[in-house]
Image (cartoon, rainbow, N blue to C red; front, side, top):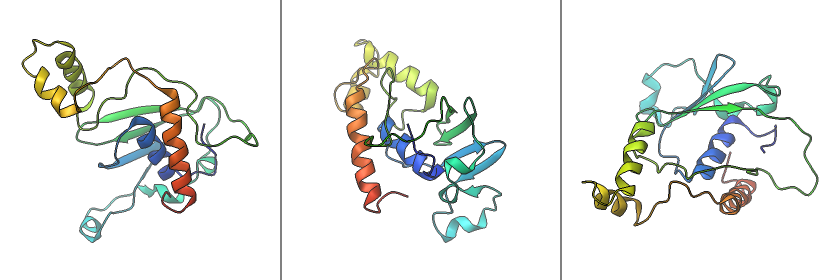
Length: 173
């Protein structure tokens, strides 16, 4: 659950937090045929012309989204993480409820920089098979253990609460 006054950039940061990723790579939202992305990170990027709009300037509630609307979120263009986001429901904020909030999920998020969807499939095959030639290497890379079936809703929401606290102190969008 995400408040409609949040910007697309803040939604990007929320997705990063929920997935356990570190915001190392570029991202893009495509909403109703319009691309939104982060502003050029420095003057070296200005040479690349783009018609993409700055995602820090557009709030979710101003994008013409309705229930059952879908839009695309792409992260890490090299790895190609494409996510279709579905607006399941639009409800008024509930007093006393802290946002953003994850309501449900399943399975572990792929580790950042594992090579995109196909790289993740290879990663899982290797870590689940002790006889795989990359088993030891990839378990070491991931920090010793990884359960692709694991999902901890409470842990994700603790991270989102921390994110919310930081954002309210001016460290988010």
